[in-house]
Length: 296
Ligand SMILES: NC(=O)c1ccc[n+]([C@@H]2O[C@H](COP(=O)([O-])OP(=O)(O)OC[C@H]3O[C@@H](n4cnc5c(N)ncnc54)[C@H](O)[C@@H]3O)[C@@H](O)[C@H]2O)c1
Image (cartoon, rainbow, N blue to C red):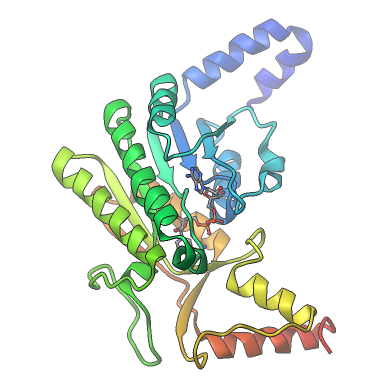
C-alpha cells in the first residue's frame, strides 16, 4: 500500500476507507486467479499480490482436499487481495461473481490434478476440468475484456521415453489418463473460444512442478515421506519413464511473463530442461537424504 494511505489510517479511518476505494477503483487490473489455495495457485497468488500492488487480485477456490488456506496466510491482510470460496462447476455462482466484480483478466488453475484419482473417478475430472473451465470461459466472455490465461499440462502430449525429444507446442495431443484427457479437452475449448468468439486467450502447458506446499500425494513429497518412514516406493513399471521437473517459483515467474507479454491465441510450453527417469529421481532423493542424515 502506498505510504500516503498508510499514514491516513491512524488519522482518519473514514478518509482511509475513501482512499482505499479510490485505490481499488483506479487499479490497473482486476485479476481472478482460480485454484489459488492449491500448490501452484498459492505460489502464484503470493507472487502476484506482492509484486502488483496496483492490481486488485481475487483468489477463487472451492477448498477441496488438495487445498490449504494456510499457504496464503502471508497475504490474507493485504489490501489488494480478496478470496472467494466458490466451485467453478456452479455456473450460477460463477456468473454472479463475474457480474459483481467485472474482472478484467483470469488466470485459471483450478482443477482436479492427481492422475491416480482420475483413474478412480474420471467423471469428477470431466466435471471440474472441462465443465468448470467452460463456465469460466462463458462468464469471461460476458463480463471481461482482458486476458484469459489457461494453465495446462504437458501430459496432454502423452508420455516420454528415454531418448525421446522434448514436447513442443506443435506436438500432437495424445493424453493417456482421464486427467490428461480432461485437461486436453479444456485446452481445446479454450482454443475454440478464441477462434469462435475472438476471446483473448492464452494457454501454457508446463511439466511437473516441485517445491514447497505440494500435496503429500504427489511423487516427490510421497517418496520423501515414504523414505523417511521406511515404506515401499511405488514406482510405475520399471522406473524408466522420463519426466521433466520445473521449480514451482520458476513456473510462477513464467506465468507472469506469458500472462503479460504472451501473444493472444498462442500456446507456450514451460519446462525446466531438467529431465529425470523416475528411478534416477528416487535414487537421487535417497542419496540426498542419506547425505543430510535424514535416512540411514
Ligand atoms: N502440479 C503440477 O506438476 C502440474 C503440472 C502441469 C500442470 N498443472 C496444472 O496446474 C494447475 C494447478 O495444479 P496444482 O498442482 O496446483 O493442483 P492442486 O491440486 O494442488 O490445486 C488445485 C486447486 O484447485 C481447487 N479446485 C479443485 N476443484 C475445484 C472446483 N471445482 N472449483 C474451485 N476450485 C477447485 C482445489 O481446491 C485446489 O486448491 C492445474 O490446472 C493442473 O492441471 C499442474
